[in-house]
Length: 428
Image 1: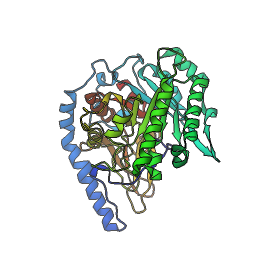
Image 2: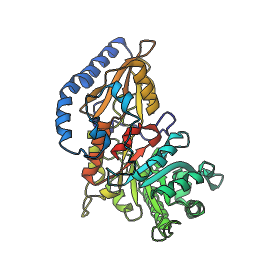
Image 3: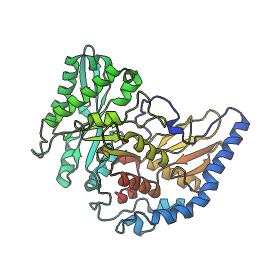
Image 4: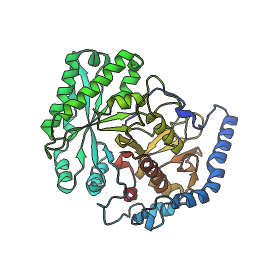
């Protein structure tokens, strides 16, 4: 998500036991931190550069991908090359390299995303502008956000491409009242369906699970069942209607799900049983495999091993059922990064592509490839001589995540396209 991106409300945990950076309050802890970072992020990349160059070159190098043709997808990239090449893209912006579904998020506070959606329209199958919130209002409900809707932008998209437009709706209404009262459930569904019909949308992306987890209702089997029933009811209501553009196409429901927060599923986690339960009513699941680290626990944005273990947990067989429907998963890929402070007090946070390029220009850093996470990073010291670590996606890190998704037969979801570098889209 970027500088103003949504902060997801999720229970705290160790997120699968991946190696983390422990920070102390003393000078000695800072020295230990520096040693850990040197060993973890400096020594191992020296070995991994050759390994990944050989291994990855042998897997998926789309021969007609412009960035592969120019030899830019590699571990040993330098800042000068990124600054010189990031804005250069293939003239053929309509050619697909990733053939599974691609869901792209666009935020109102980042206008670049709207332009990217039009420029690379043909590379996306689903576009989700972040426009709506469904809230409690007294004893009733209200759907806020139509003022964000850009009808002209949607018209431009549809003149030049076939991507479905599914605005995101965040379900902020008080969950106990909503889920236990039939009138509230019916009202919520009516508000959403009516908005889709009035505005000519192709469906919605619904975010609710993380809110319900934060309220603690998912530990209660009865409430959890009501939550699942609500999603099914909404899905069936949308599927009963046809798209305004194509009467043979039903309105779609994509449901946002968070990754498990440890190597074993917790009661509040969305698991394989939930996936199987909803698979007939939901057209896709937007899996948020990012935000692994934080200013309190600095590190990579989305370690590849963690992504893989998340898919294994969510898609594992249940009972007599086969593996979960991987084709309905949109594997989350972040196009934002993080600039973490490595000192007492900590700090830092998300950065966009523009921020990243500014840091490269100012500090001229040495970029390092970290094989354990499959991400690039660099260090710099600010004007007060405080050390920072910056993690931001690269062509290689994105390519590896695309290959992981491809190996499972998954689509991908990008948060969010206005925060990436232009040449990222040559990989899609």
